[in-house]
Length: 205
Image (cartoon, rainbow, N blue to C red; front, side):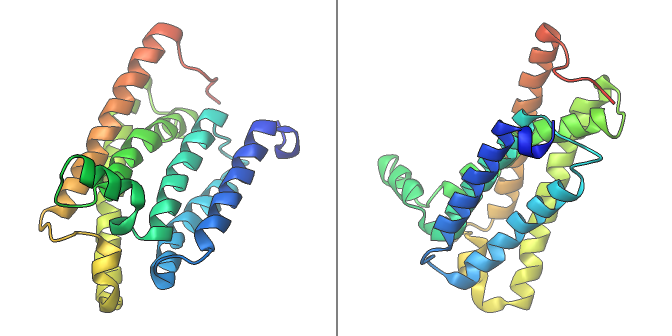
């Protein structure tokens, strides 16, 4: 279905644009906001460039938008200062704002399915291997993102505290990657159950 006729996809794009505009209004740290938005720009560019060769299902596009919404909230406040995280920290008497942990877990939970879909529809991966490769893909992308963060800190050392959001935890990188990995495993367990019960929800090309 062409984009102009796809009401669901147009609503998703409109929502993402509105959230992006909101996040751009008086962010906590404008420089951090710009850096964080490089991820959003990369995601959107990749989806636009591959739209003709690989059209994801609307379910996958919704998962992409949900993840980017969570990320834009973190970009607006900076991950260590998100009010929801502060509320959870106070509620459970934690020693850190857990919002960044939530988003890393959400990366695996929300993006594993679109990755699985791409493996079946574009890479022609067999269903038996698709679950394993989707989870390992999440692990690889999560580790790559942590390396990207480290590279940015080397180039812009004055943004290290707000950008990394380690909040004093020397194992922050390891925990973030592990949470994304766990989210990917859960997503693929659910997908495998759903496929076993209802079949693959789209036709392979």
